[in-house]
Length: 327
Image 1 (cartoon, rainbow, N blue to C red):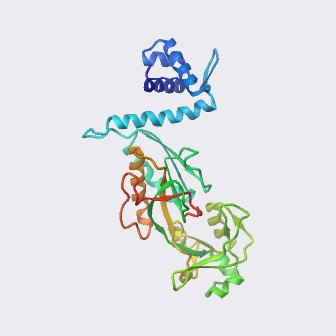
Image 2: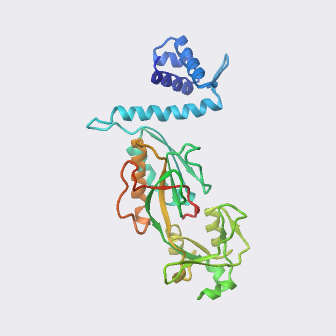
Image 3: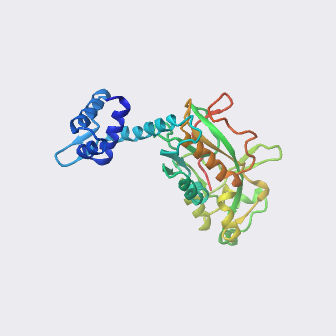
C-alpha cells in the first residue's frame, strides 16, 4: 500500500473505531487494513491504536497523528485541483486562535456566512487571552492585538485599534470626573496583566510629540482576562483603557462614559500571524482574507499595501503579541 493510501486507511479506522467497518467501506480485506496500520506504527516507532476485542481507540500519539493526517490529506486534495479552472471546494480542518472579545463581538456574528460558503471546512476556534504557541499547538494562524516581537513567524498587519478611557457612571458619581492628568492621583485604575504578578504599566497616553508616556496609578484590582477587565469597569471598580470597538455599544447605552479623550493610550496594532511556509493551504489564505474584511470597519490606518499570498522579504517576521488586550 502506498503512503497516501495508508494514511487514508488509518484515518478511516480512527473515525469508525473499527477495522472491520473501515475495510468494508474501503473495499479491502480486513487483513490488508490491519497490516497498513501496523506498518505505519512500525515506521513511526509508536503505537497509534489500542485494539481490544470490543473496541479500537486512538492512543495520545495516535490522536496527534490523526489530526495531522486530516490536514495532509486535505492539502493533497487541494493540490490535485490547483490548476483546475474551477478550484476545488475548500475542505479540511482550520485551527485558529484569537482573543476572546474579538471573537465574541466582531468575528462570531459574521462566521455563519463563512461556514455556509465553505461547508467542507471544519473550523477549530480557540478563544483565549493566553498567548498560544502557534507552531507547537498546531494553529494555522492566530490573530494578535498589540506590539509584536521578532521570531520565525510571518505577520500580516491588518491595521490598528484606537483606544478609549472609560469609567462607569456610578464610579464617576462617587469619585468625580478627572479633567486633567493631575486628577488621576485621586482615582483607581483597573490593571490589566496578561501574566498576574507582572509589572503594572499605569496610565498610558501619547504626548504632543507622538511619544508614549506612562503615569503610575493606584488600583486595588488586577485582572488577566479582557472580559473581567471590562466587567470590573462596569462594576465601578476603576478606570480602564481599552479598544474603542469593544466599548462602543456600552458608551452608546450610557453604561460607560469616556473620560480624558485628549489623553488616550496609543492605538494597538492588529496582525495575523502564521508559520513560514512555502505554500499556505488555500483554506488558510481564504480564511485570513475573510477575517481581514470582517475586521476592516473597526480598524484605523490599514496597511498601505496588501501582503502577497506567499511569504516574501517584505513580510515581517513576528511572534505572539506582548499584549492581548482586546475589545
